[in-house]
Structure formats: structure tokens, C-alpha cells
Image (cartoon, rainbow, N blue to C red):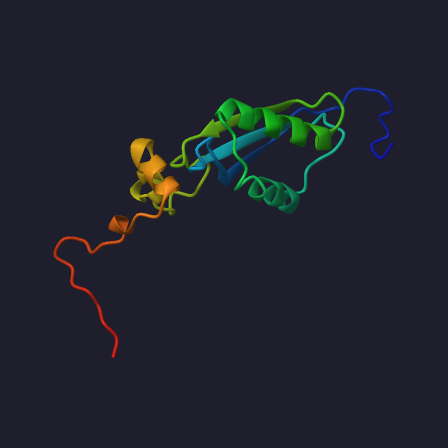
Amino acid sequence: EPLGLGNAPLPFSGEDCWNCYELSWLNSNGVPQRCVVELRVSCTTPNIVESKSLKLYLNSLNFVRFPTRDELVATLRTDISAVLGGDSQLDIVLHEHDFQGALSLAVPSLDTFVCIDDALEGDLAASVLDEPNDELICLAAGDSQVTER
């Protein structure tokens, strides 16, 4: 035993808190979804997850369809708990994409940005995903077309 504790309890308590700002997946209609996922891992787990491995795993979900957020969370819990081992204590919270967690105050508020995925809700999502729609590519009011020589 590296700590020399044998089977004695750890002389400390705590957890790792990870804020992953780039979680995305597809809903049942194939529309991209995104959120911030907060993972809290107890210090009592026998293993840890290396950050690059976690990032690669989360990115592997980009084109996977999950009908509900609950199914996404269940998949995250199953997969990550398997790596952590033992009776893993893993808390998973999904936050809206504008959640900043512990980001520096120097970073502009994420709710000042516009995500084009928000345009793909409801009837528009179905029409965009069924067939290409050239009406979605147009000039903004008052803009002029640029030509090259």
C-alpha cells in the first residue's frame, strides 16, 4: 500500500470537481444538443480518469443520439463509473450551455454569445433535417453581396 494504510479509512476526505464545457450529442431527431457537464468524483474511488481521456470520451458522444438527457446521464454514469472502479461515488449535473462554473471573471459571460443550434428547434429542425433548404442561406437585411474579381 503506497499510503501504508492497509484497510484503514483514508485520513482525509474530498472530491474532484470537473466542469466540462464542451459536451454535445444529438437528440432523437438528430439535432445537436450541448451543455456543460459537472462531474464530482469522490476521493475514495480506486482509480481516477485522466483529463485527456475524459475529453476524448466526451467528444466521442458528439454524433450519438440520446432521446433524453436522462439516457445521456445514465450512459455517462455507467461508462465513467466502470473506469473509476469499486463502488464509485459519481455525481453528474448537466448545466445549460451558458453556465460558467469557476471560470475567471475576465472571460466574457457565455450568455452573450449566440449558438446557432438554438435555431434548430421544433418545426424548423424537422424541415432542415429532412431536405436542404436554400432559403436558409440569404443576405441579412441591408447587406450587399460580395463578388470577387
